Length: 490
RNA sequence: GGCGACGUAGCCAAGUGGUAAGGCAGGGGUCUGCAAAACCCCGAUUCCCCGGUUCGAAUCCGGGCGUCGCCUCCA
Image (cartoon, rainbow, N blue to C red; front, side, top):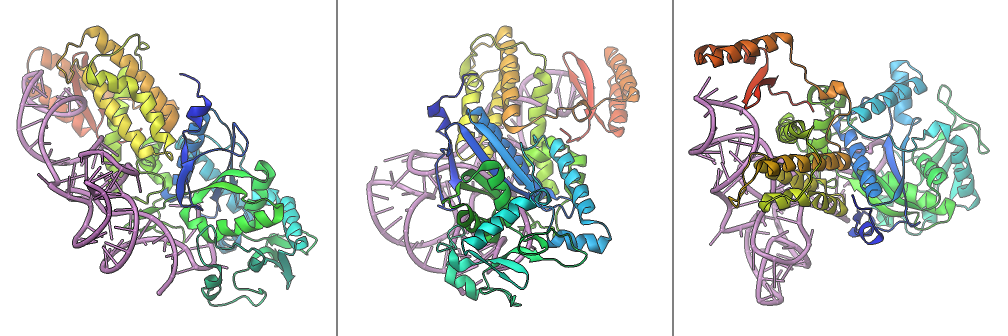
């Protein structure tokens, strides 16, 4: 593979929420990219919606690396907040135990979804000192005030409040919810530090005992690991307001850099029956059970089958449809796994398609990480490769045995490349293999004997028997095999 | 009500000025003892509707209809 040069690297364009436009990507420091992604508050088991940003950022970070950047990906756990405290007390467990349990589950699922661990996974509870430092700076700069033991950010001190969500700052006052907090000077103000309440986790600070509010932890941790200027900052669109806007104003005020984020990258939400999946609505499809049933690679591929900014409608049918499509890729993978490296050019239009695949794939990802398009290119490559391997070409021109073998080699290389870019195939044997039981092996042998004496009635009877055990018989020139019937696992 | 996004074949989904990707489902073939897999062919004269700009628009502008998200729990 050729090494990416500057021109190629700058070919990447990314949509930025703040400007509402897609524009060429350039990092703050040449050759390096710092990414901060808002992770989860681990108070409940994850649903499919949570997996989307994980998978998307895995692809984004990998593609930036492929284009020659040194990437640092930071994804946090907000392991102290209202929901967590509420849930822990309801269930009668310690906050840290609840957080640890769910965090562990995320990490395990991440692995099954072929997501590489982020470079740094900071926890809010381990960065209280950084948080206190930021709150101190904000108080000093008069961007914050104390009130009844709490510390609030003073929104009026941020002249451009509303910039990120493109919303009128004044109108937001009127839009404040009922139940106004009397401790706040302005309904838009938000808590940086919450005073100590017996039974809740708390830390000592110069402004009294208590715990961090929501939003500060991300500002503090992003600053700790990525400095004052963040190249890419992401999360679900539902975080744009208030979370990211509040984070933006406090970071810019506290660390004195504007803008502190170059590109805001927000993914669309996973919906079901047309509405957003959410933990509080409890309409989320449990991620662990889906991964168990369909396999990590299928769930991952499904999440990448639409562009990351589009909403993605989840249903069992949609996932099954993708599983079937994925089968095409998987079959070619299995059929070419031992192919020799490509040695020479391929004939016909199909040959062009197969040989150009790497460029097409990378170009698709350059354009705002368009994974839907990347998959389209992949499927076209699969079709073209299958045609050549079968000895067919659209031009009707000759396809020699050497061409066919060569096509297998190209297919193998292309699939390896697509796997590296998108994550297609499970890494472990257990996810990879579908061992056929001895019973089925025996029936296959019996059927082979029946077929050899042209007793097709018996052969078909055995095939039905195998089908009843859940396996599909496939006859090929090299003999018969069985594969799990309708098994969508990757 | 305010702000934002979206509306493309039966379903999912790319495409942001140059004449509609890809997948699933469906129909017809080739191959096969028959299947399966694979491959080939078939499907939107058209991109929610109505106007406008342009030589040319799914793509830009205006209006309308519909769906979704956010408006201090949220990936």
